[in-house]
Structure formats: C-alpha cells, structure tokens
View: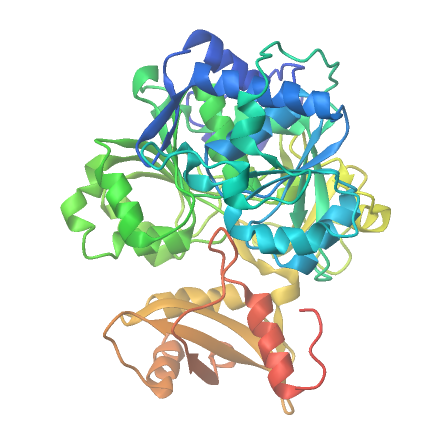
Length: 560
C-alpha cells in the first residue's frame, strides 16, 4: 500500500491501517456484556443499567419484535431522545438484521411522514411527549407497529408507566410491557454480511429535501474502531472500570451514535445519557462525576460550558479528560481557550455520508489552530477543483474535499440520482472547500454553496466569522451573502452579544475593517438574541438565508 504522507503525524498508538473484523455492528456491545457484565453500561440521571441488564432487555425486545414479524432488512424507526430506551431499541433492531432509521424527536409531522414513506418503515419506537405528532404522521401510512415509552420510565423513583397511562391507540404497544411480556433471551440467529445496511441517517442536502444515507455494518464497525484508536493515546490509558463518556450528543444523529454509543460499546465504557441540552442541568451532571474521561461535543456547547459563571468552580481542567469537537468548525479563539486550560482536545470533521468521521487532529501530536487535521486510517482524501471536480489543486489552493475508504456510505436510500451526484468512482464529494498546508493539514474554507461573490471577488464567510469571534463582546456570529444591486452580493453579519454587552453595527464593522480586506468587511450587521441551530448545535446558515429571501420576496419563500 502506498504510504500516505499524513501518516507521519499519527500518534504512537494509531495504526496506519486497521484489520476490520467481518462482524455485525452490535457485536461490540456483546464484547462488553460478556467481559464486564456487572459494569454500568448507562447512567441516566443517576439510575444505572449494567451491561448484562441492558443485554437482557435488548434481547427480550428483539425476540418480541421478531414475534411481531420484524425481520432482516425491515426498517425500524427510532424516534427517541438519548435515553436507555433508545439504546435498547437500537441493539434489538440490529440483532434482528433490521435497519435502524433515526428520527429527530422534534421533527415536524411532515418530516416524519416523509421519512416513514421514503423508507417504508412499518415499526416505530416513540415516546409520550411527541404522541400528537406521531398519531398525525403515521395515519394513512404503512406503519403497523408503534411501541411507546415514557422517558422517565428508566429513572428510579419516577415509577414505570403503563399503556393505559399513555392513552395509546388500539394496537399500539407499551415499551416496558413488551419487554416484561417476553422472557426469551436467546440471541436471534440471523445471517449477517458486512455490506448489510445498519442505519439510514437522514441529512438535509443541498436541495433542502432530506436524503437517507445508508450506512452498513461495515461502515459502523470501521467508524467505531477508527474513533476508538484515534483517541487511544489518552482514553486507552484509563482502567476499564473508570471509563465513561458524556453523551450530550443526540443518538439519533450519526455523530452521537458512533462517537458516544458505539465508542462506549467497544471500550466497555459507561454512557452518561443526557436527553436534552440545558446548561445548568448539564453542569450539575458534570459536577456529579469525579472525572469525565471522554466528552465528544460541538463548538456552541463548548462555548456555553466554559463561558458559564459556574465553570471556574468545576475545575474543568482536571475534571475533563479528552474533549472532542465536531459537526461545525470551532473558532480559533475558543480552541486557544481550551488549550490554555490544559484539556486534551481534538477537532475533527465528518459527515453523515462518512459515518460521522474522516479527518481529525492528533490527540497528542501536532495540532494547528483552525485546522480539522489529517485523514483517519484507511481514509484517502483529495482536494479537487471546485468548479470541475476533476483535477487536484496545488497545496495552499482551495479545493473541494473528496473522500474514499471504509467510512463512505453505500448510497442514499432509494435515491440513485442523488447518489450519483455525491458518489463518483467510489469518491464521496462533500461540498466542503478546504486548503492543505505543507504538512498535509487541512483547513476548512467553507461550504461550496456558502461562497459569497461580491464585486467579482470570491469570499468564504468562515474567514469573516473567525474575525467576528475575536471581538470581545461577541458570543456567536455567522455571516452570509445577500443580494446587492451594485456588487451582486454583499456581506451581512448576524451577531449574538455576550450577556450584558451592548454594541452598534458600526462598532462591529470598524472592528472587521481593521482585520479584513475591504471587500470582505460586512456592510450590514443584525443583532440577535440567538441563532438557528441544528440538533447538534451547528449554526444553520441556510435558515438565515431563507429568512433573507423571504424578507426580500415575502410571497415566494422556498427551500434554502
């Protein structure tokens, strides 16, 4: 195999290639349950389930689902927040050879119905707080089995609800009653192949119409091993009986599914499950543990934690082990603050289509502020011309990131046209633009579609965002191009100030003038109380872009 130039930057514990076992994704859980049956697998507001208890419940659920008619290849929707029930449903589904379809608990009725109809799923796990949406979404669809839980059923002291408490529709089943009603704990005998689908992960896409990335068992196995080995220089030194992961990332998102849940299965670690992000509650959870050894998260959440008045009293520098950031670029100013605290930190990059991984900074080795790092083992990355997508660009020039390797999805579910647009000769075209330096480290410039063209100049908004984050009064910021009669587009900045601060638009513009070339300086500043974000905390430019379009053309609207 040709040596990749980035291999020389790997940490000592990271192999340059991995021998991936030809196993089903859920086998990593069986490894932990077999070797450490009495270790806590989950901690949910202080209530623990051991690996063996979790194994017992997921096998009862799997056999019950099998008796209901769920079989290999069937799609099963998991419409749950991060809680023990979501872990049980995930493992039970995969154990039958069925395919997990992850659903955002806050999805609208139309979004739920679209995914149900697109995937043809007939079985759905959901919970009490969203039953109105579920009732509306499943009517007149092929859904035959709905299994409902109350999230607090798995918290000691709250009691366990029953079907009559939730006023379930006729034929719908109660989660805990399904488990209690099936005593069978034999492992279902289902043949697996690495290419079998394990997950269908829906992602927005450039058209605004969700697309379901099909991730195979081989993809999940590869991602779990890569994530585990990449951080092993720190997490590998921790005794198994102390390993834990703070799971604030939602499990219905591929980043949380791989880097929290599946990572924990493979590393025999306790998952500290957090079903919602509420900053005081999260700080209380962190304070209740002597040490959080692994905390995968996103930039907005890191900023919220370290900027909070209680942060100093928590001694985060000694309480947090390895902090990992992904899903969105982390401002350099924030990176430097974390590094200044002495916390082990790594920023990475990936997509739903690449099983959430792809590129990352070494944990111990050389990091570069603002860089997403270097490719993971067995993951080849090229930067190609943004316009043609054919030839590689020279070092220092911006090019679209294309990736090839065991992380890349099988394709989009039942969508050959979109698959052909993103997968070409085995290479995944990401739509993200980056530059490579002399060491092969990659720096995200921006999304290809976010590029602003003002007066003939190409402007990548992330460069402006980085400057805005340097302003001492700004908490969050993002900019985009809006129509301008003279320049074609002009730069508008959306700014959230830190609590108690005030500023004028001219003050922000003057700050940018001192640090940016003239044509990149925002001409309009809008102050906001908050910015629209995805479920994992990524600021959504497309929502702001749509709002601007509707403001200029109030009768048109349309997809971002």
